[in-house]
Length: 242
Image: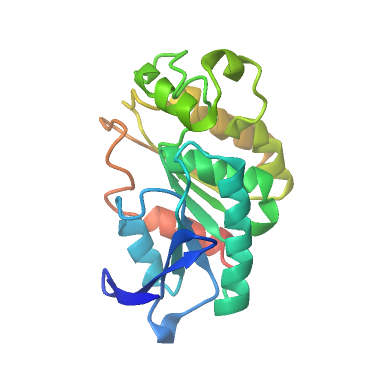
């Protein structure tokens, strides 16, 4: 285990079941049992995580075999939740922070292990694999298909009959009353919102789910987050605190 500072907060790096793990602590005087789990790209666009650390939340990360979401990664994350609860007193429920392919991982984690999810933060998320990386819609993503196939063994033909896209788990999220934050760029041509997040937004609004959806004018796939994350922070504090 090694210790360092991450954006002014105490950070420990260690291994969990042979995979790199990170835990960042809030200041002791503000600490709560609440925590975020960054599902991929740990250091990318970290402002929301810093905002929540200042409010007493912890931040954790566990390395994946691949960014394209294997069941073994999801199951390891479930055990990681239990470990953090038993070792550091964190809640058994976290808020996955999923950006792009991290959204694929976070949303499927909520579908497979909903008892460990207090809410979902999805930012330009991959939710429909036929759209991205499949490139079956308007997205410019077909170049990613070879990487996806190498990582998962699935081809585009396999995806046509696949029934575990993240959007297939929406009834599970809703039945467990999992609140969802959706942040997206209106000009995203890598993970088009109409083929991904919009499906979740429409489903949640139609069925009375708890949702915050914010689109950014003139924004593509990047940057993630908002210029002012106050609406996201307020939503997480109001709906996802344990």
